[in-house]
Image: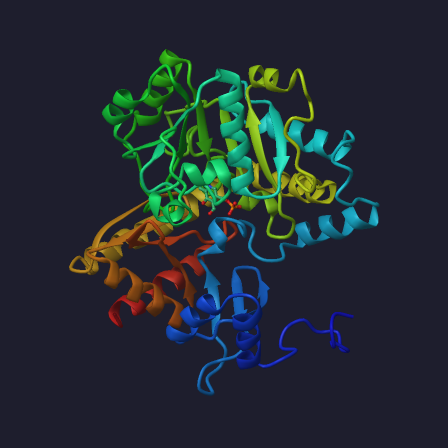
Length: 430
Ligand SMILES: Cc1ncc(COP(=O)(O)O)c(C=O)c1O
C-alpha cells in the first residue's frame, strides 16, 4: 500500500483541490498556478483508448472527458492501455524480466535491435538504448563528434530536442538561455533553408541535426527535395546526418519514417542516425533509441563502456516495445494511419476555408497537424476552447501561433469526425 492508501484505488484518493495543493507544495507551484489560472479541472484520472478523464469537474459540472490529441507528442500512439501492450507488460513481468543489468549482454535488447534494424532504412542497423529522447539525442551528437573528430553541431532555429546537455545545446535559445548554455559549437539555421545550411556547414561540422517535421517549432513541412539536399551536403562535407524522429517517426505520417517516404512518397532519404523516443514507450515503459550506421561503432572500439545508461533499454521495456513495433509495422496499420490522416487533414482544410479570418494555414502529414492562427492569442484561446469542448490539443512551444494535433494512431473515422465537430464549436466560441 502506498502512503495512507488502504483501499485499492489510484484516482480520487483525495479531492482535486487537495491534490492541486499537494502538487503546488511538493512538485511545482508555478505549474499548479498556470492550470489554476486557466480554470481547468486538471488532475488526470482514468484513461482508456483515445480518452483521458479528469478527476473532477469545475463548479459542480461533470469532469471533463478529453479526446487525446496531445498524446504527449506520440507517447500514446496506440492510445491508452492498448490491450496487447498491457498484456505484453504483464507477461514480461511474469516471465521474469526486470530492467536487467546494464553491463551484461541482453537477449531483449538484441531482439529489439534486430527488429528495428529490419524496419530502419538503408544501412542503419545498430541501436543503443536510453530512457528519454534528450538522452538519445545526446548520444547521437556524441557519436557524430567522436566519429568525425569535429565539434560543430548544426540544428534548426525553433528546434526542440530535449533538455539534457548536448540536446539542449541544439535547442532554440528560449530553452537554454536561462541556464547560460551558450557555445559557439552549436549553430542554428532556419529550417528548410538549404542556402543557409550550405553557407554554414563546413569541415568543422560533426553533424546536422533536424527534426523531420519540427513539432515545437510549428509543425513545419519542408519543400520536397530539401532533405535530399541536406543529405548531399552532408555527404560532400563528410558530416553525419541525424534525423530526430521522436515525434514524426513510428508510423505517425502513415509511413514508418517521416524522413524515408513519410514527408513525400518518392523522397526516401537515409540519414546516418535516427533517434526515437516517446512512442517507443508504448505509453507504459520509458525507452528511447539511437540507431546508426555500423561505421559509427568504431567510436566504442577502444572502450565498449564509453557510453552507458543504467536504466536505458530496460529488458521489460524492450519486451513491450517489441510488441508495439509488431503492431505499428503491419501494412494494414500504416494504411489506417494514412486513411485517417487524409480525413483529418481534409477536415482541417475545410475549417481553414470556413474560418479564414482566424486561420492562416493548416499543414501536416498523416496524423500530425498544425493550425497556424493569425496570432498567438487566437491560438492560445483556441486551445483552451478546444479543451473546454473535450479535445486535448496544445500549442507549439516555439511557435505559439500554431496549435498542434497528434491524435492516437488507432483513432477511428467516427472519432475523427467527433474531433472535427468539437473543434468547429471551439472555433465558433473563440
Ligand atoms: C522532437 C523531439 N526530440 C526530442 C525530445 C526529447 O524527448 P524527452 O522529453 O523524452 O527527453 C522531444 C520531446 O518533446 C521532441 O519533441
